[in-house]
Length: 192
Image 1 (cartoon, rainbow, N blue to C red):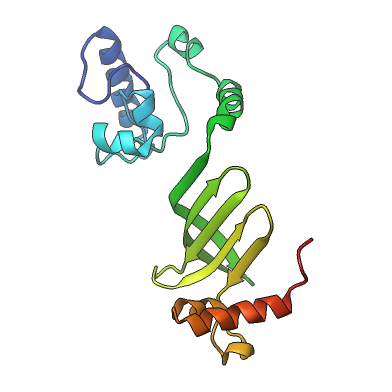
Image 2: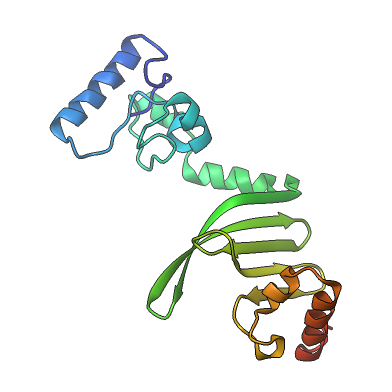
């Protein structure tokens, strides 16, 4: 339930109207997750929600927005407006890093959740590293640059005595790195 105020930060007839409407919904539909009054930024952005409405099950994750009146709704950007704005300004973004990416993958019929980190930089550099649910072991890495695309999947390899190439590289010895590089050079066709 959107307002120019979040929680108890503001007062006035407009805020009171949203507060009363929120309480009405909570009374009639106690199982429905609803929050209000709440400002748009606190409704959609988790970091803002953590400051303005800590403990809310809705703040920072809202997917449905109720506007207090037609005027407010008509002055809010629409989804096509936001997409156009982002596309028009994407050329200004030189790099991006995401420290907390959730990946849902499936091995056979078994779903696996992985936690990943991702980094992109113009013009074509990309890197992603994903860890197992326990967080300590890197399960795969992929990346690209102007010349090549690569990926690692953690699985045993007879060439490395049953170790995964990534585990062999992670050992950190120069001879381990050289062994993996020699294996790769022999296994892949040259890039053109």
